[in-house]
Length: 300
Image (tube, one colour):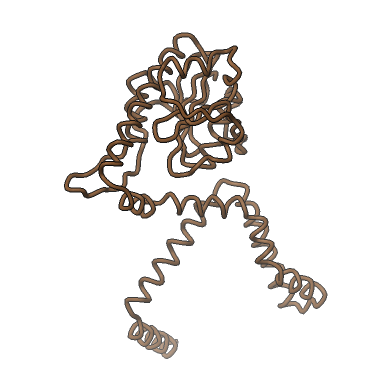
């Protein structure tokens, strides 16, 4: 036993002597990838698929150990096409992961470097004007209990969603937004898309959330559509309930509710208007909602 322990210790020391800084980097990168893969599949349908794959791998190992030739041959044939099968089965999760990478801080920093200060300042002023118009309109809708669904486009372009509605390209104002969501207007049932502070399109159809088991049964179609587009993109969605007048915000598949005019304005500015640092140094911002209250038990 002592000789075995000494031998194991000597092997460990020999291994550590060959350890390099690049090995540490390699381990950190692989750990980061595995951690994010677990985050992607956790609490989704992919989690059950992963469990099924693990069971198949265990069965394959058992067929090899106990010399089950027919079963082993079947598994061997199956694994020849496993890469293609994984790409097909996990297509939604892979797409979500790639979109997440595209929305990373590195991507935002690259976009900041590719644009000039003057263009950014003009763009941010337009975005602020758009936010003010939406906030004022939402406040009026809250009083009159007018339903509204307003999507602020960010890094993820929503061209496929825009194609389902009518392109407007208009300067936002309370009157314009009010006319679009007037209950007898032809575009009031769909969503409005705000791009760079401008009303880009209206009457757009949004995908409904697929995570119905995690959504309160009290939430209506408008809220489920807001969750759906926030799950598939980095868009910020403002919802006004037609029944209660409650103002809500959907982001990353989560709805926060019970906003007032003031808290809605603060939240939208934090989410949509990145700060430009002094001396031309642009710093990417990770926005976080600090106001509002998550409450899925109220009526939509």
